[in-house]
Image (tube, rainbow, N blue to C red):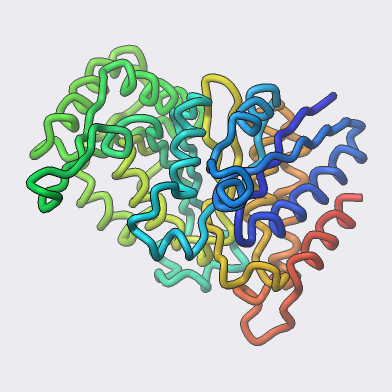
Length: 353
């Protein structure tokens, strides 16, 4: 199979972790007889520095022409520390989501047997955790009307959702639940917010189309508590943009490291696959960043974008082997030897070969 993949390394540790995912992907392609064409493109702070725009038209054209996008991370301290910066890397991310129609972020959370004691939560609370949070990505408060008034002394951000936006995301959630444990949780704040009441009403109307799925409705604050008390009780959760942004970061620590969790953003045009961690600029160029979340994102890409399940399973298998054998970066090594980012990538690629 010929695979045309846009490669958006981004900022900070993005280029380093993306390089390891490319090594692994190329090893998979060689083993299974695929041909990958990688097309690099700029985004984020590096794109602002180069062309003054965090998601240039040239990058969008590359993404639209690709079969899938493998993405690193964006962000830089010089923008994080300047709230008045007129152009910011994160604007590029929002623009990319909107222009590509990336309406659903798929964020799995699961545990690794060899690392379960790395989690800040007790073993007995997290064993068996295997959940997916589906976050709506192109609506809500991040895309609503915003501004200042009263001479800049009052600020407002508007949360707006349409029924069609909710149906699109919820349909994906129902379908995903049907392939898993047939449990779906709609996360909202319907006791306070009108937009949440529309979410709940819409999902309730859809229940009749999926009679095998057991649906629960929970307020976001209750879910935030239960994620650290009893995460294994959840299977598929669906929620709006802001709630999903917060809950997915909370859920990410269950595994013991943000450097382990992959994600996908499902689009109307080209879907995107990325690690959940940020650009971690303090580690950039030091060859110490954990590349496993990016490698596992590549595994999601092989399976979800191309239907190559065997290839994806092999990547996950060698990642689990690296964890079990201690071939890990310093964030996971404890008092044992820490491997460099590039060494982990080489080890994984060689195991596949």
